[in-house]
Image (cartoon, rainbow, N blue to C red):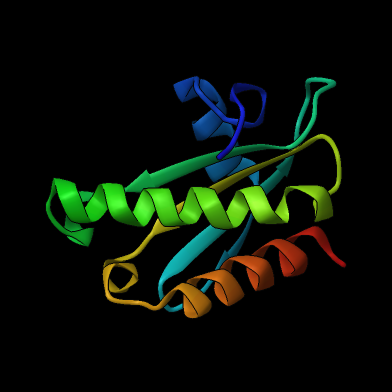
Length: 112
């Protein structure tokens, strides 16, 4: 799982990344990337709206996204804030599909 230092926790940080960050849209997710103003490591945030499903489904999708991001953490440039918005299709998407979409969003958004 992601350590607290690798998580976005303030609403202001979420807003900043979503409004000013680079956006990569996929079938099941939207990945927003923004270089952080603070000298810190990589930070992730997750948005799972009610349109994804009930509470159990939303929590499962968020846990899966967190696990994928924990695996990708070493491959992301330091000082990057990333917000991943789960779209309704993410509740039925396979692990491989979600992982490839998130990896593609991170690599495309960071310019690598």
